[in-house]
Amino acid sequence: MGGRRYLRLFQAGPWGDSLFVKEYGAGRRALRQARSEFAAAAVARRAGAPAVRAWAALEAGGKAWLLCQDAGVDAALDRERAWALCEPLAESVAMFHAARLLHGDLHVRNALRASDGAVLWTDLRRLRRLRRGREEAASGADLGHLLASLLPLPPRALLHFGRAYLQRLRGAAPAPPETKAWAAGAAAAGWKRFREHQCNLDRRARRQQRREQRGLHPQVWRQPALAAAAPELEAAAAAGHAPLKLGDRSSVVRVAGGGGPLVVKHFRRTKALDPRDALGRSKALRNLDAAERLLRRGFPAAQPLAAWSRPGAGSWLVLEDLPGHLPLHEAVLRVRGAQRAALLRELARLVRRLHLSGVAYRDLKPSNLLVDPERHDFILVDHDRNRFLRRAVPPELARRDLAALHAGLPPEVRASERLRALRAYDPRWSRREMWRAHVRPLLREAARRRHRWMPRRLLGGAPQP
Image (cartoon, rainbow, N blue to C red; front, side, top):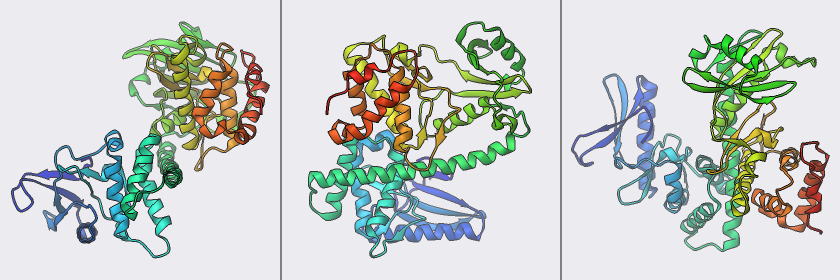
């Protein structure tokens, strides 16, 4: 089990050959916390909830300790293992709720798989009883914490989870429509909790950034060795050797670094005055911050290594090199048939996850998506226009992202392939009323965009209502 305050003690006794020891720290408050969790574990076990057994809460060596059951060396669960155990996991949560108890901190890292296959829960410091009249809302919020740690949970696994949870809670198998409705509500609660948690992490990261990003031209070095090589990287970007992209506002080049190839992007100074540049928030710095936010949310983004700016010269961003990855509009032409359809479906699911996570990309052109055509690995780049919201991305912003993506795809991608990708983004869009409400405005938006390929071919493939 993870956590720096847990130790395994090999000591024979009534508990077996070993037990787990949880360290709380020193002081009266730590001792109260240990005693509180000991009492919570006793309450949960008396109510029949699957909680680890606590043997003692004591103070020794100036610190408070909790001695609890050792579920085994391989008891800890990660997200992938939890997907395979979705039914036992759901039944264990239902046993808490059936006993009118709320765990309060349901997270996959707090679940243990015992040697007999049962799922046990630890870290019970927030355990509380269900209030009458608020059972559904409170249990839904409790489940939202768990599902947020399991996302993106496959739809079939979520249905199995819901069926097992409802059957254990009510003692009878639910009807399929009821299971689907419950799964939709639980998924919405999970995404809501996920967005709230990530926004809280962003707030903590901003406090750290304020301490390290001071002045009108702050410099951020995720690899300190790059600080000494900054003049060489600036010169290489100005010379334009091994260019990946050359434009009026920016250029991207590949340079040889001490630890391997690096990608350097130079944002040139433009005539338009951006107040953020004057306040020390250059484009390179905004890209670095947004990329780190995406990585915290589990999305594939190029790892930022450094960002800095110079007065009157623009700003520079250093990224890891990504060999074997091509821009999306080139990658889709390397594959055909079923492989292209699978690639577009994976892309649609990635964009759907972005929007459910509250990420409005606002510049989702095919050139900003790098793809490995063989492994279907996507990498997101160019993040200075990203927005991170506490709610799901509104339909109008989601439509802009999808329109930019569809407008930039080459004409060799057929309308039927685009339609299948839209169905993978949201299966409800195959209905006539949903098509009129969402897909038609999307196609009109795509037709207005001026990209390299003519997007008006999309309108020719739209089904007639």
